[in-house]
Length: 346
Ligand SMILES: [Zn+2]
Image (cartoon, rainbow, N blue to C red; front, side, top):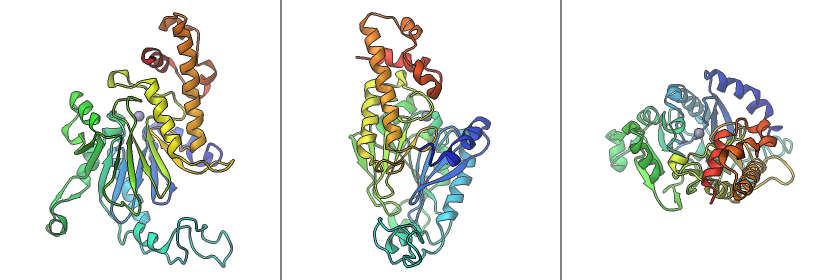
């Protein structure tokens, strides 16, 4: 994706991450957006049902995130443009000449995604990980959001509580153990391999998948089925080695299984960049090939270290043998990654 999105997701964003100052909104596809520049990425689905977030950033970026989420809310508000095309395969407006004057989406879908007015509240926050880079902003974002209680009557009576916070149950376990503020804890947890949101949200089905013992023992990937976007959390961090967290139950085998799960869910474009868009926990937007390249790197490094460990090399000797040397130019310092792979190899 470096080419197609180079101008948007390249040097500009790296600069913002370094300064820690500015957040940017990047439209991903359909009504799914990515907020970048704060260190960790936040995925936002915006529409008539309200804001559905994947991750909440760090506490330091929470107020800036709120501003950006409001910006996205304003972007998707307003009347639906008239279209005559039905279904997701319609072409961009004008791309086929003036005789096809509609966008890629259907009139009914437009009516669903275009909210009648700005200011739809944050209603759902999914936590892909217990890491404070991803959960630290939760108390502020959830408090600014809304869960409607007591059905329509409750809504009319203004019975509101903060936004729903959804995560794998191990996030709750990890956050309580690490004494994270109670307002950052998930309010809804799941423990089965996957969890479907119980309603269409902003015109699409959203499904959560747990990838056991990958970066932590609490990771979730989120699939937006109609927009064809996957939010992969820290499983996929193009530009840096995976931060497998041994203390929180991460393993290299689980990471590989998780990356393969993302690839299984994603569809590539034919000999092109494109297809399913994949938002990683940090860094630029990717597609299926980007995840496959990342997965291959993890697998190659795993094989090398496994071979060295079989031959009886200590962790220090493995480090000195530089098993990641040909990847270090892309992914940076490998020390923690080498140690995590070495220690979690079966
Ligand atoms: Zn992260």
